[in-house]
Image 1 (cartoon, helix red, strand yellow):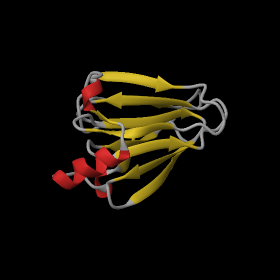
Image 2: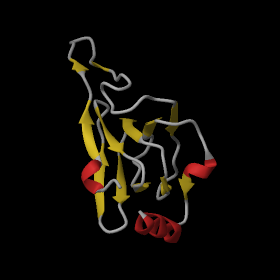
Image 3: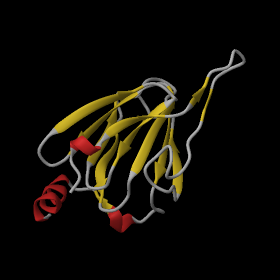
Length: 137
């Protein structure tokens, strides 16, 4: 079972150029899984949170392309807050970890790379169910 030790920042390749910098990522190279889905979050009203769930199978890599936010991760025992505010690194969150996004700055744009296609049955949206899931492992 994954723990908070498995949640970590991954620096992306960065090409510095006076005309503007460039970063990129590649499946199974820059990130530790093959991407099956990409989605983005934007226009989050002040004070709102996103997430508040875990995945049974899906792994994610989250990049803040513009703006900033905090991601709170929880493994059933410990909690950790990670701030993201640069487009040349992202946060890897393996399956089995609860996550919540908060403190969105104005005009924040977040891109999420997922290891699976959307499957509602993969979500654990209830905190008590998540604790039971973690304890059953």
